[in-house]
Each structure stands twice: as structure tokens, then as C-alpha cells.
Image 1 (cartoon, rainbow, N blue to C red):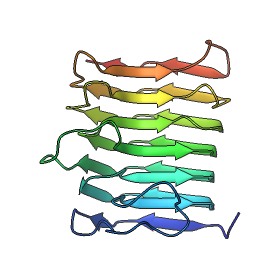
Image 2: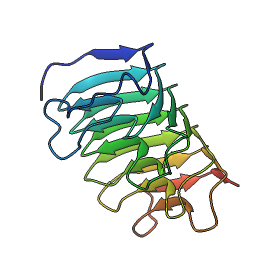
Image 3: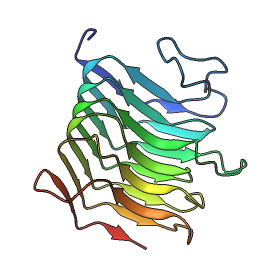
Length: 181
């Protein structure tokens, strides 16, 4: 892990601000992403506006002790919604809180599908135009302990999935009080 106590806040990133090339240390991600935090710990990504992007808005990979809160992210409304783009991606991360974010127009709202532990996804608003096979919130079976609570997911297409917490229900995988409509 690299240094800690990083704060990424109060930025506005629009289509012109998205990199045309791949950010450093992000092999496999490709270009067009908003905020990418890789191999860091003790990070606060808070109060940012990421709009009109063609890639993932916020990505936290190989992360430890992250807070991703109160961000506004929206996809490029001029492009067809693709299942490849996601509002917030959490991968291989421990002790991460994704809370109070406003997400609109992505193929997927929030995904956490790689190995991780102690993940909290709470109080997020995911609105409109989730792609036909997209998922509002998707938590993969490899995430050990997770709480998904108090999220509002609206405007999903009939073929889309509102909320998917893979694996058998257990005391360490809690999903409650989420509103899908």
C-alpha cells in the first residue's frame, strides 16, 4: 500500500476533463474514467461532481479504509447506455463506505464484485436509465461482509436488476430497507 490520508474533494470533472489516455497503474481499465484511486489507504472521496463521462465515474481498487460520500455522478446522456460503464466501482477493497452519492444514467450504479470485506453501501440515490441488463447495486459473492441499506434505485428498465447481493443470505451479508421503483 502506498501513503495514506488522501482527500479528493470538491472537484468538477466533465467530459472535457476525462483523460484520453489510461491513468497510471490502472492496467485493464482503459481511458475515460473520472476519479481513479488505486493501491491507497485512508482515502476520502467526497463532494465531487463527475459528469458526462464515458467510463466509470469513481473507481476504488485495492483499497483500504475508503469513504466515498456525497458525490454527484452522471453518465454521458448523449451516448447509448452501456453495461461497461459504472457510477462507482469498488474492487478488492476492505473497510469501505459508499454513502449519500447521487448516481444517474450508468449501465450499473454501484458494483463491488471482487474480493473485499467490511463494505457499507448506504443512502445512495441511483436514478433513471440503467441499461437493459444493468444492475442498480451489485455485490459479488467474493465480498465477505457487507451491509446494503437505505438506497433508492429508480427508473430501471424491465430487463434490469435493481439490487443483486450474490451468494446465500447470512448475518454478514445484510440487505435491508432499500427502495426499488
